[in-house]
Length: 316
Image (tube, rainbow, N blue to C red; front, side, top):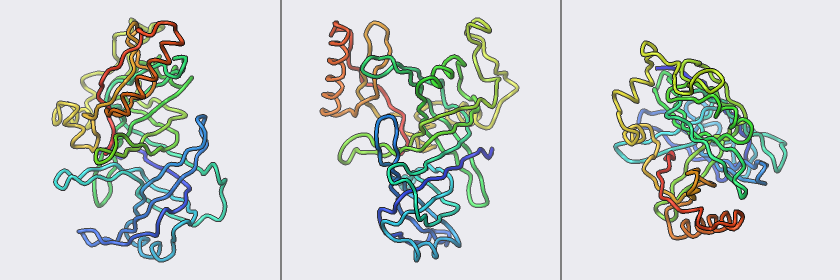
């Protein structure tokens, strides 16, 4: 299995005292959660991340760390689901945790670099009240292996602005290998018992590692020809195409939900989605209706915007 890059450094405060347990294989594990404050263009946001520390570091950390303490966590993002028990986990498997004396109170460091392959073609939209802000979203599969396990972590990636425009012109295809730099966000969807948490990456920069899996744009070719070749079959290709022929099956095996539904506002004339999806609940539908109404008023044609139930890919 490939060993893709997966590295994050996040500063935050413990939301509770650490809990020390032992895995079924006898390894000690220290678990806690941290609150990371981050200032984005949307304002101040607080992201909560689960952290797990295995092995020799677990017991000393469980004794040393306390609720409210500021720490720097260095490790890997992990998203997994136990198919037998149905239990899921998304968070950070830490390689090092250090008490931190000082950090910007309203802008804790939050940096992630991850490499992997696209699970499908990216989706490009124009969002915002004026429907003029570029946004590109896609899922990425990053594979890691060590002496204890082999795993594939699926993450949703969001790209905004000029970088989204640049990537849209590349016409990336399923299987393209990317390196993504950005920050990690925690998100939730649904209400009550149906509420599900997931992690996503807000990308600031992406690098294409494999030029073969791009479609030629209008400046190079006819927009339809792909650089990929049948001889370049990878482990990722065999996993997604042979072992798991449908997206839902891939999702079930990898810890990604692809059968969650939500309300999306759609421009009837262009077919372009506007804004982010809303939960498939009465409250979510009302919020989506309000967005459609606001967009219609701006254009002077209320009938141009409709609601549509769409499938949303999230991680459990």
